[in-house]
Length: 176
Image (tube, rainbow, N blue to C red):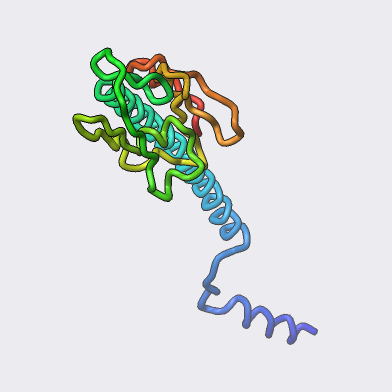
């Protein structure tokens, strides 16, 4: 029995120690990597929400500018009375043939179309629709007042703007 113990001692207690990592060291490394991964995931999610808010604010300002230009050239907001120069005029309105405009609200479609008067054709005021269906939808009311609204993907409306760029920032505050 003593010779067996001596043989084991020689094998395990030899001149060269065994190399490698212990199970505890490996577990510590895995835990640290998990913590770092969690930090990165939460940081990236926050950036995604901030970029959606910035895009929403930009899209709202674009639609507001297009609606104001429409009003200046046509004499009223989309959905309202077309009355250039304060006098009734004969006109032809054409809806955008852009396939992207299918399914959009009428106000945005009007901004993507043209209006023809005897003295010329105006529009389109928007080249493409401001779409980000995963985060929000921009709607131009058809009430003739140029009200821009932001809808969440679930269909609930956010705060409508009053038509000035300074008021647009509040509309997109809950977009994520």
